[in-house]
Image 1 (cartoon, helix red, strand yellow):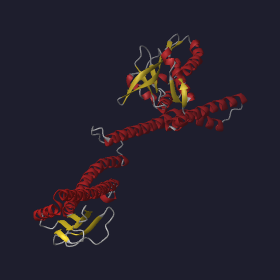
Image 2 (spheres, rainbow, N blue to C red):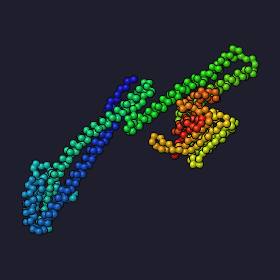
Image 3 (cartoon, helix red, strand yellow):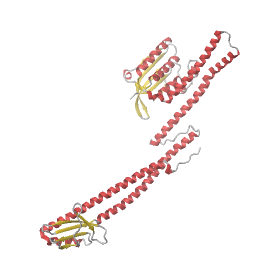
Image 4 (tube, helix red, strand yellow):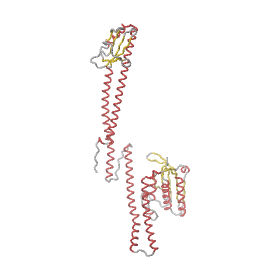
Length: 469
């Protein structure tokens, strides 16, 4: 099956990269604008402070040497700064010009704060003078101003540097985004190719796990677990189909033969007719029981019952199940014992369905009684234990049932949990081969498990459930 590659600009990864780049560049541009605005404001404030400091110096000089000292200081200032970027004007009380390089006093009304602005004396005009008027104690007027040429040059240099940085940020953002997108799309492409191979029928193919334990590795592990579960379910379906064909073919064939026999030569004796109908009814009941059990198993495995879970205390549940089977065990002189430590009894609570859990415990006890020899012993143990799940320690409840039956070979222990599977030694016993399948399905519905273990004698089965938190 061919798959067309998605154009880069139309992929989700590319859109995320472009969005992140746009946000980064936008924030960088905003930061640059704010920086330029703050720097320009700070430097203008500093320029105004310099003008005010210069006026204070001239005022101090006036206090020492009068107008002559002020004129001499202004002359020295103009000699030191002949470019016209500093402006001075000293007027007497009648408005006559005494010193300075400013042709006339500013005629306009000052702006807020008492500042005047006009083009700088430097040619060509490329800056603005910031002027301040001050009246001295003898009535003369002093006007001092500095232009903002250095501020404009600094801001211009800052803007050029910011533009270059902006362009570099944009370029690096696109390059880094493209590399990140390529890396991301590479992981997704591996998953897509794996999915394509599975769709084409290679159900054993799995997503490669690199061992980096990053998000894609965890996704790969989850997908592989899902595929393993799907494969397991499909295998169960195949086993169930084969089991149905094997276990139901015989009763259906017997039913058909008897129906044909009755059609050809119906028994005249009413008792014989009733016996024939009873036998056919039993065969139909057996088939219906198997199908009802399979439907119940499918419902449990679907997980829909999890929404109705409540807090369940396993101590009385195990007590009730043991009490229920004590009478059946005593008929065959089988000793049924229960050990339940006080610590466990006080806290063996799980989130689950009480009826399903009771059914699971009863199924295990039923098997134990069924396959135990007369005069044997069955021991039930309820306890809390720590368990490790993917590196995380959690508390679980374990229900262990030990019997003295014939036991199950290690290589057959997983097989007995399949649907409609009955080992050769158990085909003579009543049942349909669904008991342990139901127990494991109920355990996994409760996020636990059921397994067969090595016991001292016979079979040890363990039902493990996570404690309620």
